[in-house]
Image (spheres, rainbow, N blue to C red):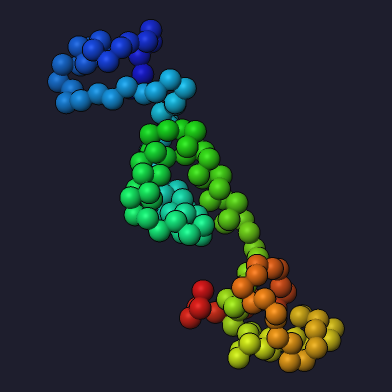
Length: 138
């Protein structure tokens, strides 16, 4: 809750005697106008996982920060959107990579390469016309 004119912590509690607690907002921090939606929370968690963040306490802290700070929410949702818009995939995620060989590769084909082409870096992100999702590895 915000007060105009500004009220200190004691004045805020005095104005709402039935309140259990009140936490002052740091200057410059803005409360979000809406609750953090489930799909937004999922997007942020997906982005955190994509950068290798697996510390549960850190993930909880980031989500809490996004629930209470509009700037933090905008930042993390922006990062999450950037990864959602990335259409690059690794060869190792592709159903057309079998035994290390790209089975759709042929000169002039969807993947223009020699027959029996073996990607040298199957873990590197790239765009490929021959990409086919592989549920067992993605």
